[in-house]
Length: 326
Image (cartoon, rainbow, N blue to C red):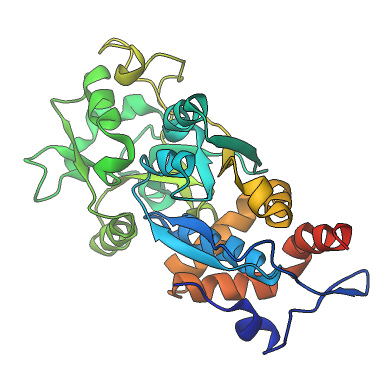
């Protein structure tokens, strides 16, 4: 699945000529071994995988893209079946991430500038049409479930979560913890893309919809409001020691981290140095996702376009490393 950045962006050359401060630096591979990059099941992660892969290729390295289950990816990095993990969300992935680090083999490779939130919410037009008076306060959900009923919800209002493999029973437990389970039911989307299909369908049909979403994402620009649930605290979720008196808690705002196999700094020192330096912002990550979810590009083509349009962002991370190595 690897795409050739040299062909797609710069034309065919014996080596990519990268310029920084008007100095051309030849790209020499760190190693003959490919860098193994995970492919998960949401747009920003996949496009960013190809963006980072393109950066590594511009430095002379080869990459391979490996489909992987999200929670299993951290063990895969620890064991060397993957080289990096580039989009680790604090609210739902930190336990698996830190558990793998404690076992040894996975190292922290820094934090993106973007602040994250993963939460249930509504497109802004739900509030503008007053389909649930009182939103975004969660208490409003006590009196508006009828406007969010769907054929599969048994007469209750529906929350559409992402795939169950993402968060397990966090949202069903929240509905119970808030005492809303007599009026609301949680259903799981088969894929991340199904969430955006639901957004479009609900707007067309003029009905309410509550879906799982996150920021950074393309919906930052299109208009989306997260519901204000009771404040999160460590241990409130059932899997972290909580009970139904605490599981109504919302999601924490948090970091977006990167990790790597412990051998990566030695096997690919220049690539690792660039990876540890790179740090994307919320608008940058949102724009990556929008190229797929709004503009309907393939993930690989979206990465090629993003790299071409944002050379001022990523070239300093790679070219400074190549310059230091010469």
